[in-house]
Length: 263
Image 1 (cartoon, rainbow, N blue to C red):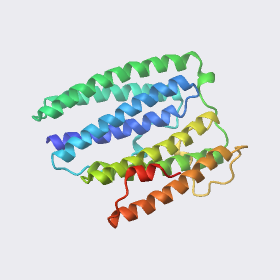
Image 2: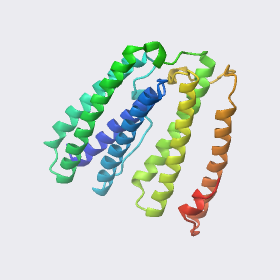
Image 3: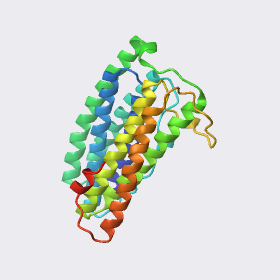
Image 4: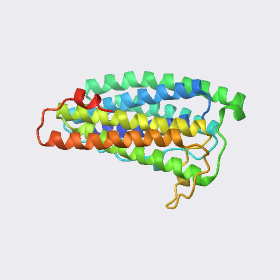
């Protein structure tokens, strides 16, 4: 395999891991355990960025597509964490083999460093698995009606798809000013996705994309004011970001500072 092919394959693998770990994080009530998985997901984001940046530097475009069909979900969280352990084991095996397949010294070093991270992640997931096994009922969310599950999963998936579009632009754009802007957009969208996921965990709503339907029906959540307030606030910010982007295209000299000062 060419080095760029290895790098692009790894971008895909890291992307799947990121989404899968976030989905599994939103299925656990225990904040400490959720925090452990969130930190792993953040490190996988760094890995994805490292692989993608190297591929772009070597002259390739990196195509980022949504991967919700490739993740493990809609199962008991204990079983899903075991899938995460397997994912880390497979990543270690794949990346170790790739070291001998590339002649690019920087990619080799990158793989060596990331393998060490994946070994650490495997141990953390093993710890999380043990903790969840101790008390399944306390740490695992219960399922409300399907209409509610569909509604919240729809919100979560739509935000994820938006993030994918932004990250693709961020990775492939060589314009520094636009990269800063796209990074800001991605971070804001990730914050909203996180808020939706946290709300789902708090209200016992499982993340399971198969429940999404064309007609979502009525939700039985007694108080949706918190999440709707966040959605409305973000909608205003997103409209401002769209206007800002149009002005950027016209060559106006706004800065990220101008953007972040807006509420």
